Length: 428
Image (cartoon, rainbow, N blue to C red; front, top):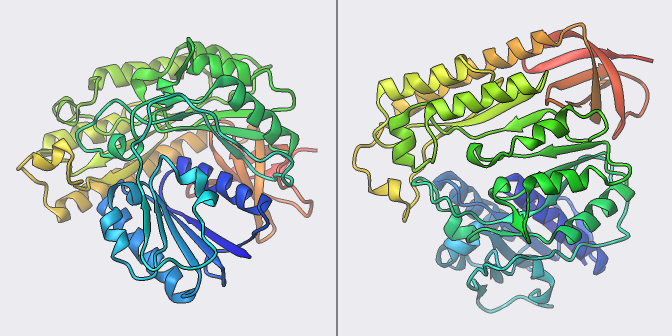
């Protein structure tokens, strides 16, 4: 039996798809690239924007057209929130919400269903463990480790607390066991993932305790925190970043969403512009060479020109070295959907383009600060004779080599910049 999986959306979805892929392989399935003939198709959906919903439906139909006799399972956030729409797509056999999706194998039938089986159980609030597969094949790239689920923050633009449920955390011993297994299989870097990472809390342990415990895992070269909310970051992690013996890399991705106090208030974000700026400046001062990125949204209902200029200034006049720029997408059921004053789509597009330009300039300046310096790069893949990878502070680096550098950490001297890529040469 051949299984094909496709993931839309966030790094957490990608992490969960990897877990499912290994479970399917352990059950005897051959995992094949999406688009090839398969007996089982798993489309792991996202619903963070209208565009994500549309793309999810398109990919479901695409798989069914290519594999009309295959068992088609649709899982994840759009399956949770838009099950009725998914069920109207001819050929779908199974719709699994977020509570049960990692138990996919229990629901996969031997033949197609006459109508979709829909499982959208109430999402529990208990802390959890994950049954990962031991003894799987070697890993040759960064590995992701899910430590947390759900969110209690209820930002006005977001429906993820409804799709993913409220905050719950993974038992520490269980996540440490998986981390050791990932390192045993060859992972040099582990990336912590979750919906709202900094709210981790299990039997008195917080995110800093997780970081410190993972620092003691033998053989782990790098530990990276993925996106984390600005109000949830303990200052103790800076001590880990500055400790040469600790694998935590000097990098943070901290979503700001806006540089305007008025918009932050309307978004129900629990900090001000100055709170955010004070924190990133403090982080920049505490950790030499730290890379700090952010998310910025344009076109939020009621966003004025002055509000937008505040977002531009936040990115320009801070230690941030890039911004992921998003246009607001109205989500039915969210508080922001009830705000009457809308930003025209063409204006939101122009604002997005300007912030992208600012972000590219900030990235170039950050790269310039590292020219002619020696850095450590974890290489991932090769294209046109150049191996590409990332430094600890998330510079994207390429270096020519005839060696196989995949999943190796090597020293590189940086020579020149091309866009958001820095070219360098290996140091013997």
